[in-house]
Length: 408
Ligand SMILES: *Cc1c(COP(=O)(O)O)cnc(C)c1O
Picture 1 (cartoon, rainbow, N blue to C red):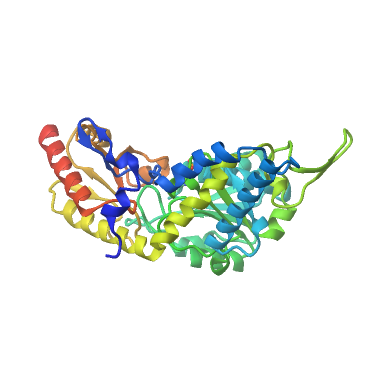
Picture 2 (tube, helix red, strand yellow; picture 1 turned 30 degrees about the vertical axis):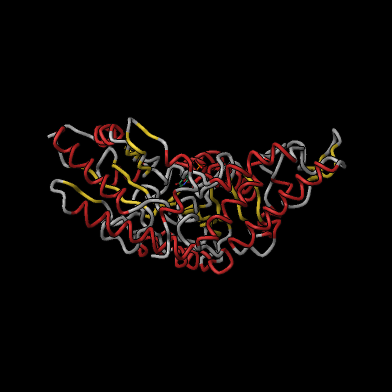
């Protein structure tokens, strides 16, 4: 393993903090990752040295802030290999990115058109499409999953028709950690004449993403799940689609000319960036990408795969414990499981783990349909980042054993 976790941990001040008298074991990275010093310092440094509004002022600070933000856009562009920097839209997160696309496509869709999502989606890749379907009388179709949590591609093929306009699926499931075969999903959608939005919130910190190679039409993610700040996200969209979509919000910065009769919109990307953005956050996102690149995504992925393998092996040794999607074709970044003890639920276990300073997520993970598919109210989810260690997993396993004793 070329990842030096001891050294990496020193770059994350919060990991030295105590929770309930235990040094924190942070295994809730799929909800949000911790932030390294390079990100924390850049945030405060921005406000200390160049704080100013962007794209507006002639004055020096405003020019510096604008330059830094546009430089960050270019870093994101190269990180996901987008063709043009103006195909990178700053948003406040994955949720806003998906809502932006749903709203931007609205005028281009008509009653009877079809949108396909999957059973494995986060609520933020379900509800915006439901709302849109209700407004426009569209049909929402669902790709089912098999008993491993893998999407059933045969069923997906049968769902695609000439009325399918958009397919929206996640790259990696936040509830089960399943990696979806998005290459095939995109290819099949394109053959049917449909566009594809990929929810990359759980893939971007773990897997190398090349939007051109994938040929994704839209790819969305959040900075806060990749060691960056909250309130910042990215929508990548192909130029020709962003061009024909309607703006999401109206306001300053997104216009060319405003009269009371008519407003013309600014060119990309500004058409989709109404109002003062999260300037500091947008600038600082660059630092979280630099952090990832300094370690290398391949190395990060390898390290996290080792953690996943070890966690699977250790948890398998515990009796009366069910791991979900253990035999999925590919998994990344997290493990979802339950103790099979009558009259207890995932949050009882989460509560006991917290007493040991261990942070995991419990419950439905904003993905109620997939919980329903497996007929469970929720799971215990341990999700990994580059600073996690095999010892973290040993502590988790000890905590689970403790919980078992208390709950049995
Ligand atoms: C976290 C997450 C989202 C929502 O991201 P926000 O940052 O809360 O907007 C959407 N999809 C998946 C798969 C996620 O993990």
